[in-house]
Length: 131
Image 1 (cartoon, rainbow, N blue to C red):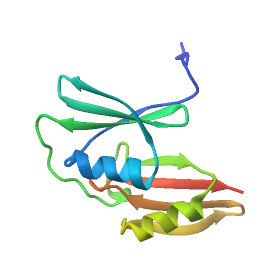
Image 2 (cartoon, rainbow, N blue to C red):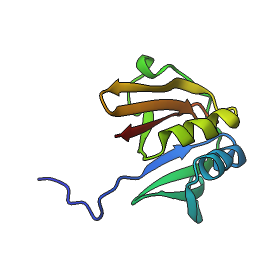
Image 3 (spheres, helix red, strand yellow):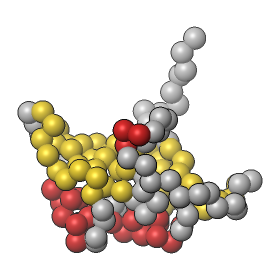
């Protein structure tokens, strides 16, 4: 059996320590559109649109311990990738806002550029542009 997608996207949920800082990062700096805010059994959930996908920021009822490991030191989901068409502009905006970079923009292979930043809780956000 295989799963049958309802749409050509995947959503991700991120539990955050400071919802205001996280919303400022994802909405103001990255430009994701907030489309919904609802109560769930473990906190308050803010759904932000990226193309056909959604980043779901959760303000948990019970705070979790800080987790800022290096990308190669942990297992499980370590970063989110945003395929983009304006990596230079995104990097400039992140630099101006003082967002910490994990990796500054570089050419991974011919025509493929990546950059990695950290959100307010240390989640690594990767941008990939294919030219």
